[in-house]
Length: 206
Image 1 (tube, rainbow, N blue to C red):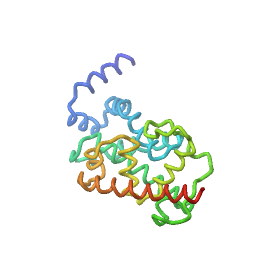
Image 2 (tube, rainbow, N blue to C red; image 1 turned 180 degrees about the vertical axis):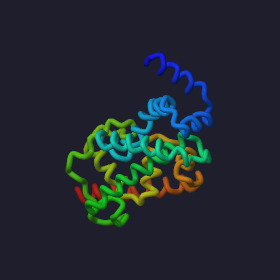
Image 3 (cartoon, rainbow, N blue to C red; image 1 turned 60 degrees about the vertical axis):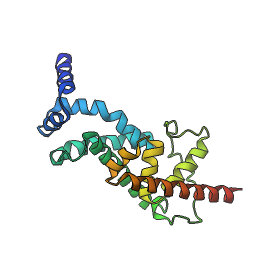
Image 4 (cartoon, one colour; image 1 turned 90 degrees about the horizontal axis):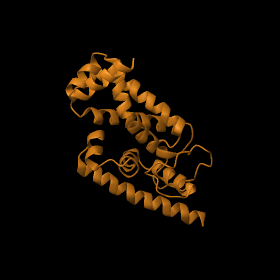
C-alpha cells in the first residue's frame, strides 16, 4: 500500500495541471487523494475565515471536496484548478452563512446601517487564532466578525478573502469573476462601512 501511494504521489507530481484535471475526470482515486492532501488545509483556512467554528469549517471542507469530485466533469479549464476550488469553497461558505442567517434576523439580511446591530453572545465563535484575526481580545474579534457578516455579501466576501484569508486582489477577482478594479472598489466600500458600523457599535456601548 505504501509503495502504491508513493507511486501515486510521484505520478501526481509529474503531471501538468491539464493532465491532473483529465485524471480527475477519469476518476483516478490516487490523483484525487493527492489533490485533497494538497488543498485540504488551504480550503480549511478559507472556510474558517468565513465561518470561525472548527466543526462547521471541517464539515464545509468535506462538502467542498465532494463538490469537486461531483463537478470535475463539468470543469472547462477556463480558470486555474486552484481558482475553481477556491470558488467552490467561497460559494459553500456563503451558502452556509445564508442558511444560518435565515434562522435569525442577522448578517446580510439586515439594512447596512441598522440600529439593531448586536453581538451574538453564544459560543459559536470558537476559532480566533486564525492568522487573519490579529486582535488579542476575543471579544473584539467577535465584534469584528459580526460587523463583517453584516456587510452586503459582495463586500463581506471580498473583505474576508483579502484581509482574513490573505488572498490578493487578482486572486479574488479570478474567484468571484470580477475585475481587479471592482474588487478594489468593493474593498474600499467594505472598509468604509465597517468603520461606520464599529463606530456606531462602540458609541452605543459607551
